[in-house]
Image 1: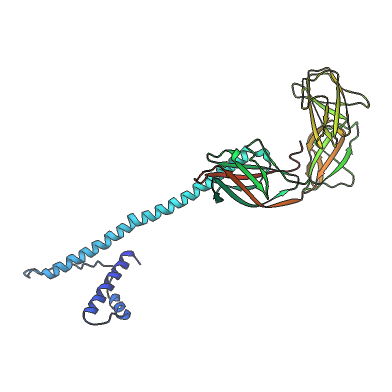
Image 2: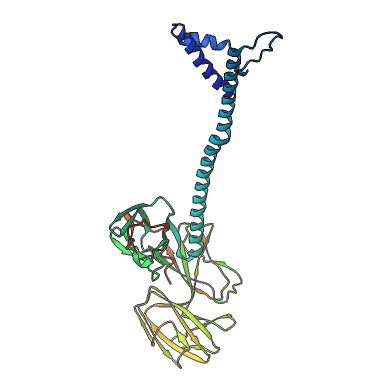
Length: 392
């Protein structure tokens, strides 16, 4: 039913009820509806009747016609108002609401994109929030409750906090009472207790085998698992040397002998499972990633870097194993592959089994010195570096 018809029906209903009341008749619903049914609500209230020539001017009819015309105009203006003003306001409010939602969504995705692009090296995101913060204020301190998170044992967590006009030095993340500063403040991390479970395998190729592409490590009684991660150390008792053109060559340490580096370049190798390494250089290297000639308290997988100007020989003693290179293994169809061609024949494979997890039930962020005004938080995120990612 058209809107003007609805308005006319209401108008006629009122008129009929008033007329019945004036004649002492109770305006019941059935009587009113029967009379309305006889009225064509598609026509205007004003009904034009042509006057016959010679009749006197009917003032009462004229006044009644003017009231009917006024009523029709009232209906028209009311409909125009609803269409041009009321509906416009409602449509504008509806549009503004959805535009605000779209802008808020765009803002969230922009911060999320900036987070992922700007911190790709920080592992996977295990918590991300860009709105709906559960914030409580106490004096000049604000506390944001983040709920619970689950992290892998032995991993490290990078805590990211971005808010307008808030210094990272005033922000503290808390994991069940253990605190950590944001990553943007001194590159701090939260260390999750524990260590990833790992199993090692030794594998050797024939010495006369020529390697020209990636290759399978066909370890006896071994099946590679897609849920595990693999690190492959290659070149036992060997160091890798990169010249100024970044060409790679390998120098093997002879039993009881030294490594002789003829050309200028960078020497790299890994000490696996050792606690110390002591060096004896024929001359002082240009630079190295340690001081002196003795390195103690080695990490389980410790990388050594030495730069020299050529004609350098050095010997080393360690209680660990030395390997020239380290690569991430590739699993295809339950087979483990070394990803590149490399002229090495002795390998150590470390398999990292799916890690056990720990849940922190109460994770929060506290900001001090905020004053009386609410803080404008843009993003809160926590990124996890797995044990594999933090080995070096």
